[in-house]
Image (cartoon, rainbow, N blue to C red; front, top):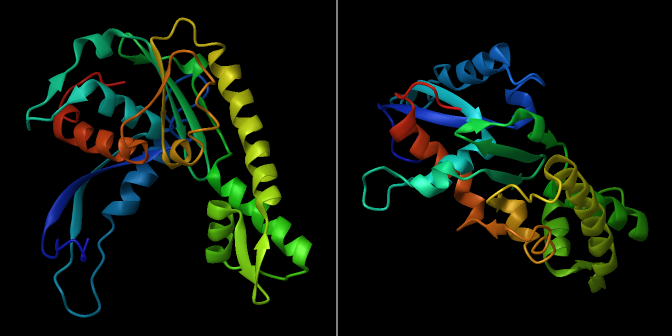
Length: 248
């Protein structure tokens, strides 16, 4: 916030939690967890260099994948909010592939269908972890830097001992294992998605795995700039929904 030039200002904020951390199995909210999350960002922080503090005066928490649904149904391209009536009515699933978790949220009749929604503790960080373990085992290393792992995941190669090393098979195996878990979980939650208007993929993992997941559902789509769908939805929620009662 200091780097953003907000010293001396109080702001309103919205953040997210995975679906399973937000809701209990019966669909009720985890009130204590949400209150702790809200309070965590509202704690005063005083810069040690004497600059004016930046403060969060209001902090709301919503399910992360649901934020992408708000982004999907609220159009504010002209600076004024407009609900897309067709998207608002249509039953839709949002699959949010993140770093640590993958969330699935089904929204129909402007309400979350909890029996078809949930979280899986699996995401792109699992790919990196498995690749790192494979590199350490293959080259008998105690540690491998995060930068080297990111390079390996991105290109299938990394530089060790002054030479380029081909680790494409390690990356492929890790991606395949994670993809199998994600596919099984989304199919368990959504079936074939036949009664859904759309299965919308969002999140940074949806970008990284776009080619591999492109044919999971006949009615699927990749959100525009999917890595930012949740952030856009949280901003729209703050601007247009926070004052409205009855939000899902």
